[in-house]
Image (cartoon, rainbow, N blue to C red; front, side, top):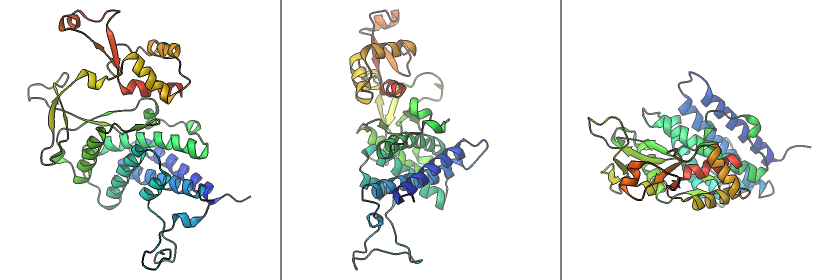
Amino acid sequence: MPKSRSRLLQEQSLSMVIAAIEIYNKPDFSCREFVFPILMVNAWESLAKARLLQTNNNRMQCLFITDKRTGRYRKSASGEYITISARDALKRCKPPDVVVENVGHLIDLRDDATHLPKQSNSHPMLIFKLGSASLKSYSILLKQWFGLGLSKYNFFILPLAFSYPFTTLTTLDLAREPETIARIIREVAANQERNLDDGGHHLICEIEAELVSAKKLVGEPDIKASIGQDESTAFVNKKSDLRSQYPYSWTEAFDEVKKRSPSVTKPKFTAFLKQHAVKGDRKYSAYSYPTLSHEKKGPTANTTVIYNMDLVRFCASFFD
């Protein structure tokens, strides 16, 4: 029995994802950051179009572009019907906004890579974080839309984000970056304020700049910075706030994990925190001291522990 158009596109999409990861993981491959987004965007386009065909009885017309002047479907110079773009196809599938945001940034970097690649210090980190986030979203939607999982493919390197999502990108000088990279970083910073996180999908990273004097080259940053609304001003200073970095109490963190992994119980959550030594690990938690004198004495059994979103994601992915 011949395969449906939807099934063929879905299989083609999965093949391109695997190829993208293999390319990224190749040792001594200097063009990985340019080739990866090309393959990954093609994979997303095929997945989205496969989903549209799946929900439209495999009618190809759902992918065609109508000429507003004639009312007919547009054709290319070779006579083939022109189909909608990757961005439009994904929007029509109505995934969470954060998925559209991340894949949209990948599309911008894909366009850059295929036309005129530019030198950028932030580009490799953006590709890694965009790739990690988009791979996780791809895995979730492939399961939801087609009932397929990716665990059998043994993703290494980029799949680190499935269990340990990276959430901090440091940048000191946007003025040195190409406009495409600088614009994406500005957009990510703006989206941060919206706290995009829906159903296990997450924003690629948080933009955080460490502003230090020439003499202070080590230690924790005293000031964090974000992109200002006035694009002529690269950064706006603001004091680091512990509560903003670790916004959840034990109960609130458990509730957030429960939303993502309904099977988690309080005893399981407690055992997870002990097993992974989360308490006191600044990657996931911090001690909240009532006074400076308490902080100088150090934590006790009664010291309050607060948690961040990294802990929520790590725990939810562990139980998934």
